[in-house]
Image (tube, rainbow, N blue to C red; front, side, top):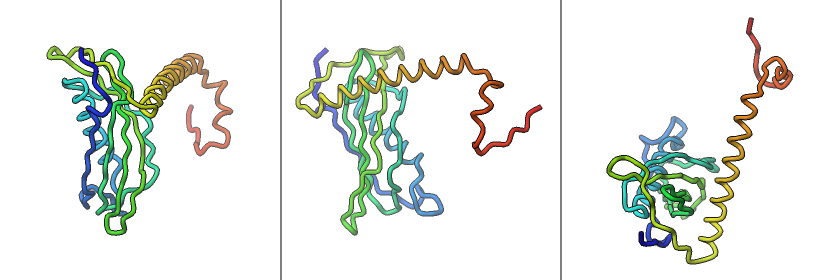
Length: 182
């Protein structure tokens, strides 16, 4: 399988934010932005894999600033990491008010995509060629995020298995909850 560079599959999607995408306050719904992020992640990952891909997880979707009707949103996607059949696509979202000439970074997210073959089984993806320190940094960060995610998953499962409601009720002190259980 022929290796591919990060630049080979870099993808940018730009879309005008129209009133149909907005809530009553004129701010774009987060779901619209998530849908656009999924589209650009698919385009980027399928280009690298040379096959159909599916989204398996989404990380780091923190909306840092609102997006307004009339702004142009550009989603910049690149492959940050490849495993055997998986790829992590980093997506940087920039919203631009073209009248004022102001651009703002609204979020950065990471979509894990898996390549599929004709039988809908996981398919191997090409190795990734890293050509500069920034690409190496992103690849290493993806490995660290993957490891931390696995550690957090194991810790949460351990806590869920040990959870004793009667012993943990003091955790609810000071929380905005009313217990109404028999």
